[in-house]
Image (cartoon, rainbow, N blue to C red; front, side, top):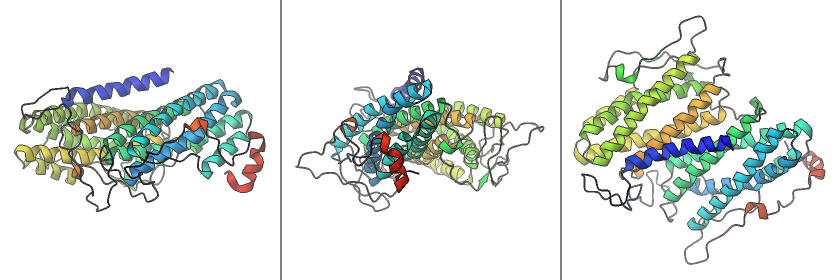
Length: 459
């Protein structure tokens, strides 16, 4: 599909940037003397993170509960979404619904094969049936007809994708296992494509979008009739601390602001501010690192991050001006403290501190961007979040490519208590059959679905 080809091309472009600037070619050796061939993306991890919660040892690095839970969630998504997409190919009333939901089912077959392969390598057992809630969704959808069928299928699928997308992003940002990290990147591309396809049906209304996270403070939108706020480029601002540029006034957000592109939530507004402020400290750090870092790879990768942030800053300023959102002209006090901390280091300590601070910051904002992409009802913010996520994903790869991203440079994984434990070594690795070869136990045929829903299994 054209939509899929566009997304893959964009993802490939981001990946190319990461490959080009990590110096990861076989035999490549920088002036620091570190050979890139076979070098791990992360510094060697330990078995227990800073929070003191033990991680399961596994191939590719320690596995957190969130890592294992992601594999289960992706597997169970395929167990119900493939069936819905296959059925929609013949039952949906609109051609676009049939086409897009059928494509989602085809892609889920590929994703199911991927998650089964990763789980086998990590010895993580996977479920063979969807949850009771997911089986209820299938019954609910199957009980509809005509346009109601299309609307219900799109709503259920878009809600599910919107809830899991930030979860995938958080695992990508926090995982210390390289197999999981790579899988999360692939899964995120699939889920993002699926949200695009569901939105392209024209049936993903407000009830199909998860609610945005609560945000107490965000900049006020300038009323129409007044000049639109225009933020100067970062490079035009005085980079010294205390440069006299006031931050944007912040107010309590009681509801979404209406614009010509759809309502703006507090989370939408807050994202624009966060991206702007990220550039206000990461651009000067990257430029300084090009001169002061002790390793050639640190100089190269952090310099590239700085150059990409200049483009991202131009993007966020353009979007904010069109939405009449004022942006700050200085970094936060905490961010200015990071600049001072990094600047006070020298030698390899400089490199390690810069990489640590940048990777922590990127890891914390990455899930925030994903959540806005999944929940916003504003088309400009949605498209901007797509672009910002590609930038931040590339930046995490560039930072990991320095070889200096240790456990202290990664945000803590979210607590998960119900994830399956890996099978112990020595015995056979658990393997799961393809999702499409499994019956959904207890699920009635479509003709019985109304009775199933009435018995409390539907909405």
